[in-house]
Image 1: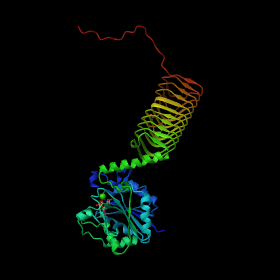
Image 2: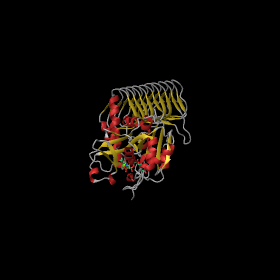
Image 3: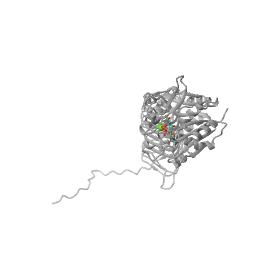
Image 4: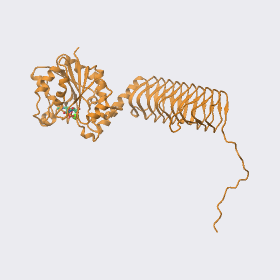
Length: 458
Ligand code: UD1
Ligand code: CA
């Protein structure tokens, strides 16, 4: 098998985005456009991935600093797609095959590209084309009477008759690197735009009697590019539709597939029900029979079987054990580890907190930097005072403890197993196992109390 090099063109300015950011850093599905294309190249098991960058290139390189196996090639001046490819040729191996992709065409699938790579490995020049009802703006595929591809003509160079052709060039092509090298060296810029057109290699291939194979993509969205924010939004919707379909295939019921957004990766168990306006970010794993109410955001979370998440929760960096019940209006922050059967109710916030099996934290509570045992009852309005202005301290609550409402746990502090804290307490020293702690101030009653009154002005 010949080596595959994927050349990703991403030097264009993207002026119509009206952005300070390079176009390829704008996200679809929470990831930069370029990240999608790089991932597709990896799926194809490309030995080399090259990105031609230009405008705002430093920001692009910084964003992808962690991505290994990418070679960056600068194209200081954007003189056309042919010129862009020419910049990569010194880094390409003549024994291999090159596949050209665009950094701003993010939704192309590896399955669509595989036949092009295979054709190039057999010695053809492989093109990806698409039939469009409105072909305006694109290069047209010109065929002869036998239907063989002869050349590509850019719209600005096309005759009125050629402009009526509806089969257009997606810009994606694959060919043996040695052939590409020869043809790119022959390109000139004598055309309407004064650019070096990569598309001119097609006519050169025909001249050299190299077979040109055009593959037509059935799903036009795969080859849609992003030039402005309108197109970005359209691609986002198409991408989200794909994610929703995937979730449904895996066994999730979506109350409205148009109202769930996946900005990352979600895997779901069977018989999961996801209500409207749920957003997933990062990596989320849902067990079987999970139910998620409307208006929830889940980011980097693992959710066990039979968990119910009621509406309006934000859950991040959290693991939730089986059968737990969360929300409504709960905020689970990073490091929240909830065991099976835990209940978290409304207006409860947790952070760096482990909660044992069957414990209940039902209302208006903050638990930060805490270790809560099993079968603990945390009353309404309990606050771990975990921060002294400089450092954060731990609160530990033993199994079976009962924390009365409106309690302040001044960390570091430890509440023993089976201990009880009376409502309204402020606990700053440890409570032993089985003990009762009550810090309520003694009540004072004064009968027939008269409030002070202002003397009337005479
Ligand atoms: C190109 C094709 C056209 C095709 C269309 C599909 C050519 C001459 N024309 O036209 O046949 O129908 O794409 O969208 O190839 N780029 C660089 N450096 C440059 C110029 C472009 O890296 O000097 C990159 C851009 O960032 C972009 C891609 O190449 O990702 C395409 O460039 P663009 O200017 O959009 O090409 P079109 O004129 O639309
Ligand atoms: Ca374009």
